[in-house]
Image (cartoon, rainbow, N blue to C red):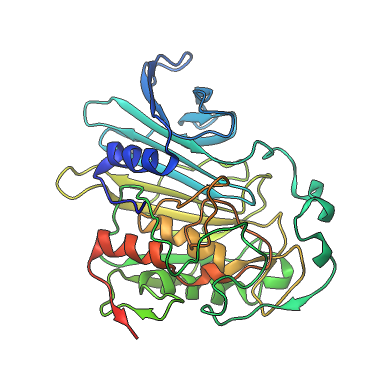
Length: 369
């Protein structure tokens, strides 16, 4: 069933619970070691190991920043009272959402969702072509269709997922972008084969999502959200190779990091908690993982991922969209939570659920062409 926006973290919890068809687990527990984290309310909706409470740790790094870490893998700074930090990642076989909100009174609320299959510790080099359902494509280059309406999903088969032009699923991370989202690009660390074309792929994806462009013969009548590319910067995105969100600096940077295994793209988003309007985005950074192989098209080898598709997915997170679907319920939407296949370029443009999610959150959208 389509998901509808609910306000705040409790709303994200409810929406994700509907998507997962699994009960939420509420748990209050002390975290030893750091006085700043005496107690949290931990909410787990989905987990690849059956919905157990994830291991949570509260530590202080060398700079004195208090960090919350889930499953020894995903880390975010403890936000100041009245703020929320969202870490959202998509991989080859699932997705992760880690949201930490600190209320005005200082209470800590955590939402953790993990639909990966438990193999995130395998580095990219350990993925063998024979393990891929399309191993017969190995070592052959082909040209992917750039017409986003052709067959719905140029590239490998998406495992029985619904048609992206009729799949109305969407979910909300709870936050909003108010006014234009002004962002910078840092191309340092980009793989050599996309170093010259990466910026164009990033800017086109920001524009496609903010303008509500889709590949389903539906066009928005108004620009519901807006973005402004402010140029290139030497400031890196605030995301470390070890998947740790850095403290916010008010600068929105998109770029690359040579990260660990288990994720293709990752967004770290800070927002104010405002009961009147929903959390307002203060700072949003995006990275693609340069440890995987990438292309901007039109030619792709069997192991290359599309830069523009994964960037569009992460930009959707910036504008407040969560994941749709999971490894158990595949999706071909831009905000698919079922993982990303090599060579697929369908996610460059929005699908029905992506469009409906933005419409519900930012305004009405368009008519058939």
